[in-house]
Length: 196
Image 1 (tube, helix red, strand yellow):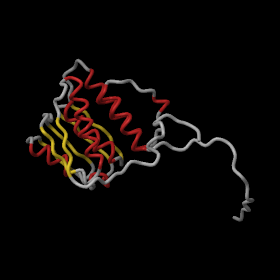
Image 2 (cartoon, helix red, strand yellow; image 1 turned 135 degrees about the horizontal axis):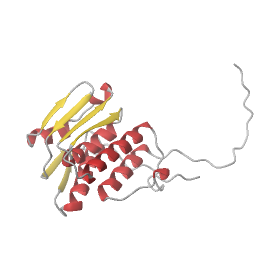
Image 3 (tube, one colour; image 1 turned 135 degrees about the vertical axis):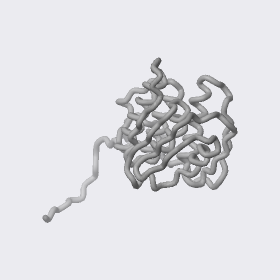
Image 4 (tube, helix red, strand yellow; image 1 turned 60 degrees about the vertical axis):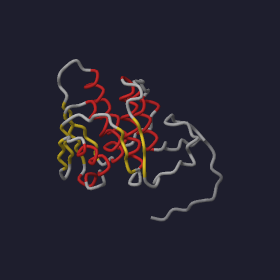
């Protein structure tokens, strides 16, 4: 197929996609703070949808009067969803099963698995799932952030959620080389949709 493209000066409005990383963090931070969000203000992609659905499950367990404390969270291929919800989910639930694509569970989880092992929390890492049985306790966490900033974010979210009921309950300390740097778009209001 042959198409001619004639040079032109573009005009009009452009709505760029919002950073997926910002959207994950926005949703989880709002949940941890107990703040309702307006879903119409979020630019949903597949990964962010998994985070949103996982948070809705956690919210239903957290606010429930029932004794049901076991949930299954589908994280698809989203490392952000898995890594940033893992500690909060194990703080809320007696048992949580993360399911998703096998390529995701082949990616590093060592910083958090080390916490689970240290606290003698049972876990089973399979080809396409991670099953955690036992609730995480608050401690003086020391975590290597050189693998991914998602581990540091997950720890900060645990701190924020725990501090809703127990102010100053969590101490944070990160080690290792920073692997993520602020985006040049960090001044952009996110995750609200906008025009440039």
